[in-house]
Amino acid sequence: MTATKAAHAAPSYLATRARFSAAATARRYPDRWRPTARDRREQACILQGLSRVPRGARVLDMPCGSGRLLELLTKRGFDVIAADFSLPMLHRAAATDRTLDEAQPRAFGPRLLAADALALPFAGDAFDAVICNRLFHHFSESAARVGVLNELARVCRGTIVASFFHRSSMGAWRFWARHRLRGTTPSDRIPIAAQVFAADARAVGLRVDRFIHVARGISPQCYAVLRRP
Image (cartoon, rainbow, N blue to C red; front, side, top):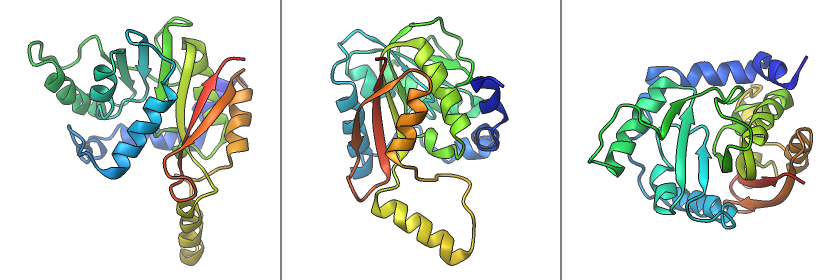
């Protein structure tokens, strides 16, 4: 079985796709994000990961969700393509996109595309950089992470900034303690070791340049900056 086929069959991939394709899930996401402390820290981490990417570079935001990063990336001077497999989420992102360019309102324009993370509709090396924010923590199987990483590596000739949940943090400890107290077995948002994510990346020919923590030791949110050897 190929990496892509294995990822398509992974239960956590199927569950994630089903959940975020639901209109009810999309409605919970805002068209405009409030500048909370957590949001500012995450955006700072993303910009730090993209620090070597020049203005004018072609950048893919996959999955873009409700368009949270559109303004950040556009103001940075990147040529941004935002993609997501969820049509309801793309409709939320379209509202954000219109606030950036009121002169050209559109339901879906050239910067917003429907796409499956395991079958991206782009040629190889189409992007200078790719951002994959808040997706991998939904995948409990390595097969799902490897399948998506393989596709991101195919379309990116430069930097990939991907987030995951790091297990060495207070947030991760609380996560496990909460499930232990409830007697439940988690299937989503599972923290993993940095070495595990690095091994998934190596499986598709990527190396970790560095890890960037949102709040080291406190928040499980962590960004891996990936490149080809």
